[in-house]
Amino acid sequence: MARTRLALLGPPGAGKGTQAKRIVEAYGLLHLSTGDILRDEVARGTDLGVSARSFMDRGELVPDDLIVDMIRGRIESAASGFLLDGFPRTAPQAEALEGISSLDVVISIDLPRDEVVKRLTARRVCVDCGQIYNLAFRPPSNPETCDACGGRLIQRDDDKEDVIQNRYDVYKASTAPLIAFYRARGLLEEVDGMMGSDGVFERIQELLAG
Ligand code: AMP
Image 1 (cartoon, rainbow, N blue to C red):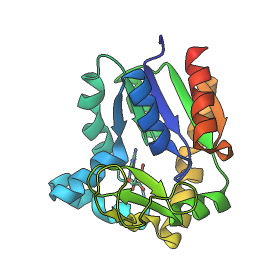
Image 2 (spheres, helix red, strand yellow):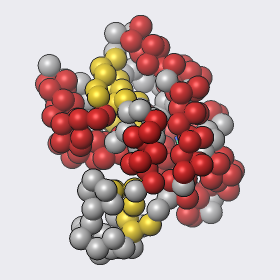
Image 3 (cartoon, rainbow, N blue to C red):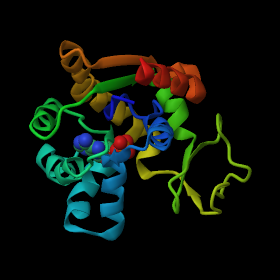
């Protein structure tokens, strides 16, 4: 595959995390999820985690300079290619990224607000391996236990409905403008998130093959 520097855009709940896992497994790229890195910093109680937590709990964005400092080295050392998941999320982040690395393609997965709320309130995540389930669309055999590793399944604090509504507003205001930014650079590919996980992944594979 010639295209090895990828970024995923899309509202919360569009399936970025799920698709990211499938893409990195299929193409051997490094998965760089700023949300996952931040949640790990919070869990370990680092200075960054303490600073980030209040923003995350409210569904607000963590300040750009903290995010760019956090991700820069990881991108620079991803020689065989990377998939950015949840970054960039603002125009200043996209501009900072241009100074760190170029991209080969930006895939935007879209999903309407009511579907976002429906999906995210039913989302569960394994505390141990990070596997994502959905009680409505991709239920685990037991609602409290991970099928993959037996870990405990939890609802993320920011998957509560009022926080989800705020995250969607933040996406529209701060991140959706990046669609035009990357379209203008000829890097944008758009995928309809309503196709479901398999349909979206097939489409992404076609895009990456083409
Ligand atoms: P996610 O798992 O991508 O939905 O991210 C969860 C939360 O982490 C977001 O609601 C933000 O508070 C924070 N976050 C993740 N990525 C970024 C980013 N690129 N810029 C600012 N905040 C971020």
